[in-house]
Image 1 (cartoon, one colour):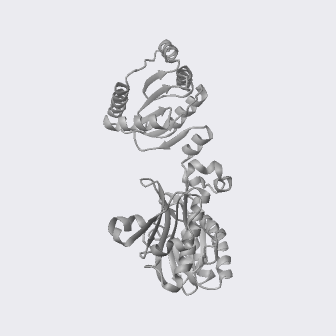
Image 2: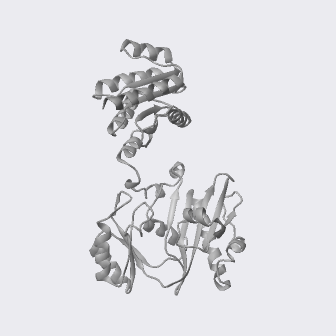
Image 3: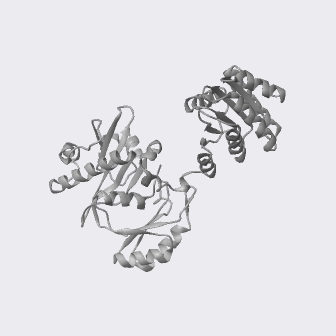
Length: 381
């Protein structure tokens, strides 16, 4: 789960990470009021869950309230990476002497949190890793729920900060690690962490949370921003379905995340393109299946639907009844390819056979049939 910069700033401030003063505005007039309170030059920054704001015109300097109002008006009219800009951050502008990058993320290969630091602040870390990996310094942390003492970061940061600022930088990185550990973040970064005339300040703030841990952090879950998710993803969550829209034309209804991923891989191997990831979960009923079909048919471009169920807790006869209910309730369903194996599979096949539907038992054959059905549907258009 991603949050806006202004939200990340709140969490940084609560940890004692120094930031330039500022606030969030939803209108040009509010931006002008904030700029007036800051008394001097300010930065006006679009609040969207996407990178590249500066290149898109979403970050502007303003000398005072009037300029801040004009800048906010321009920025609030933008769409950046498809997202409408609904708020701007207005923060005090700083005279920057040097910029560094500080970040903490999860290295899944090493099964460790890793601290990342670089003298090339202000540059996207992905770009830096690809173009100049020698400029990136890292420190893998031992597993645990307590961040190392600030002294533990001295070797990592000593080449990047003046001696008089090193202790301060170490304290900030220790606090950043604590934020990650306490909130189950997958990423927290300051870019740039800048040496200014007013000291070391976090001039930007970015945090990404592990969605699977949000139940442990209700306060963090409340920071969720609807624009991060498509309307169908929001609808799926409300219906108890795991759903991610993709750009293919073969809809998938599967039980279990691993089987869903395998199904998508097999579709790709057979020359097709999956239109989605959709896991109906370990326990299904006909209404849940109907909700899944509605999600798939609400999007454009689905030419065939592959239903691949390996029944354990999930009962295949429930899935079969859900398929028939969907045929009754949804007009003009695309061709269906059905594979039901496991609990009550024989009953399910009998239910479907009575309605004129056939089931495949071999998964590769079912995938090939779905790919062929999608191709035939495209040929008819």
